[in-house]
Image (cartoon, rainbow, N blue to C red; front, side):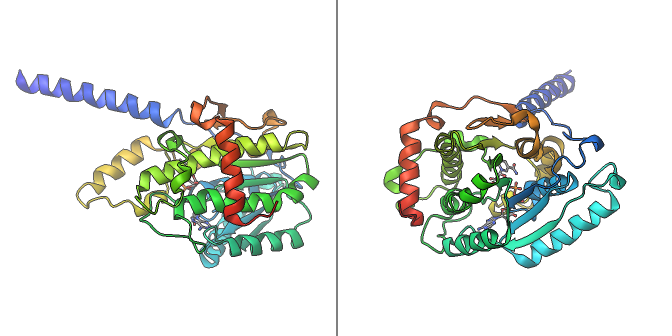
Length: 335
Ligand SMILES: NC(=O)c1ccc[n+]([C@@H]2O[C@H](COP(=O)([O-])OP(=O)(O)OC[C@H]3O[C@@H](n4cnc5c(N)ncnc54)[C@H](O)[C@@H]3O)[C@@H](O)[C@H]2O)c1
C-alpha cells in the first residue's frame, strides 16, 4: 500500500514537473519553411554573429538553404571555418534541406569578430562596409552566459560588454548599409531571463558586487530596451528591428556553469527530454529574418514565432533612452 502511494505520488510529481517544464520551455516550433520556400532569401545578405555554434549555426544553415549569402561573424576563425566547411557539406548532401536539387542554396563567408573588443567590432564593420554592397538582415545572436567576473578589452563587465555593448556598436556602424539596402531587418536574440535583470545605471560594470545571473539577465533586458529605442529611431526608414527569446535550447551556452559529475547524467536526461534542439530554438530568428508575415513589423518581442507581452520594465522609454545615451558614451560614438 505504502509503495503504491509513493509510486502514485512520484508519478503525479513527475507529471506536474513535466507540464511545468513544457510550459516554461514553450511549445516546440516545427521547421517554418518547407521545400517550396527554397530561394526565399535569394539575393539577400544576412550577417549572423556567433554563427559557428548552437542557435546561430542552425539559423545560418536554414537561411543558407533558403538562398541567402550568409556572413558568419565569429570570434574564432579556425572553429568558424570548420563550422562553415561542415555547413557547406551538409548543404551539398541535402542534410539541412528536404530538397537539395531545388537550387537556391546560398554562399557562406567567414569574418572575424570579437564582440568583447570594440577595436575588433570596428575593424569587422570596416571590412563589411568595404566588401559587402548590401546587408538585408543583421542577426545579433552571439552571447555569453553567466561567466565568472571578467572584463572586455575595453574594461566593461563581460556579459554587458559582449551581449549589449558589442552589438550596440556593431548595429550602429552597420545602420547606413542596412538603410541603403532597405527594406531590411535587424533581429536581436534576447532571453526570457530578462525578467530577472535591471539596468542599474550606478554600477553597470558591477565592480562592487558581481552576480553572474543578474548580469546575464541585465544584458538581455538591455537587448530589449535597445531594440525598442532603435525601432523608435528607425521609424520611416524601412529598416525594422525585433527581439526574441528562443526558449531553453540544448547548446553550449552553459559552458561556464559547473555541474557536479554525479548530477550530469540527470541534467543530460532532463535537457534531452525538455530542451529544444538548436533547429527548434532557431525558428523564431529564422521567422523574423525571412517571413513575409513580419514585413514592416518593428519594436516587438517574439517567442515561438508569435508576438509576446513584455514586462513594464522592458518597455520603459525613459530607461531605454538613457541606456542608449550611456551606451553611446561607453562605446565612444560621438554625437
Ligand atoms: N540556449 C538557450 O537556452 C538560450 C536561451 C535564451 C537565449 N539564448 C541566447 O541565444 C544566443 C545564442 O546562444 P546559444 O544558445 O546558441 O549558445 P552558443 O554558446 O552555442 O552560441 C553563442 C555564440 O556566441 C559566440 N560568442 C560568445 N562570445 C563572443 C564574442 N566575444 N565575440 C563573438 N562571438 C562570441 C560564441 O562563440 C558562440 O558562437 C545567445 O545570445 C544566448 O544568450 C540562448
